[in-house]
Length: 383
Image (cartoon, helix red, strand yellow):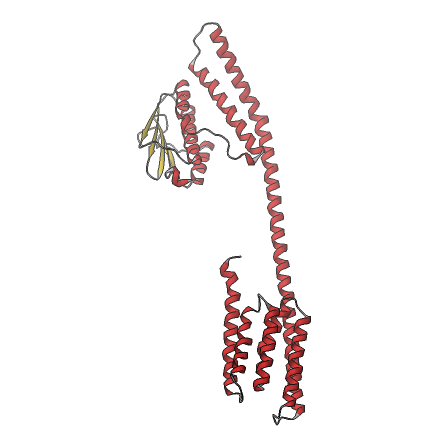
């Protein structure tokens, strides 16, 4: 609950106290016999209402005593009971019963005795009727305060139940998400880890046999071995995070491994070049990973779909963004319809999640181009 919300009742109580004080002072001015003591009592009894929420019992005692002093001093009309009514309402609403009943009784009995003992010229029956009417107002104030208290308790109970229901829904959603993460981890482990491990082991055996026979190890075979090693490492890190989200983001590759990535592409027979424009700097981790994955996926697509071609990787470091561009001179043509595959869709989702933009499609001069603009402010500002 903010300070503004807490301050509203204080302002409302202060405004109520000021209005009551102004009205009773106006009554006191036209009431014969009101002296300085009566005016002081009116101010004390009225202005005390400003604290009726924070100290309801003290306010009730002060208001009742002050208005009795005013009654002794000036014998005012029944409007003098209004501050006591407000104080009774506040005390009952705060959960007190005995003290408001006692204060109201003392005020009514004392007021009745003072009026009957004074020579006002009014018939005693009329004075008693006026006191009975005030008693009705005091009872109405108590009933209204009790109703307001019960309504407030009901609303608080409803809010607690709603909060508990929301918490229960969140816990259920988290539990389902955890179960789904474990299921995905099991599926990834069963379907990918074994296969990649077999590829890595077989590539290692082939490399070992070639070296044992004194033969030159093909670069493509070394690239397969290195790619298998990296895939196992990253898959293992991903599985650890899926099983225990507290581990945080997996230690995925970033642009610091770009040279290794390009070398593996070259080892598979894809001539690739790297151009860096601007001052290379540290990037936010999520941008660094996304840039690496975009280059990785783009080079993979070139190897799979472009045929015999060359590829160029370009990184442009600007003040507020990083532009990643991968071009090839392969078979893609602007005259042929292009249907994005899963890899391009994944790239677009990754870039969009970071607030960047991605364009991918055939180039007018032939070949294919992937361009991603990623928000990348200076890392010290982004942290």
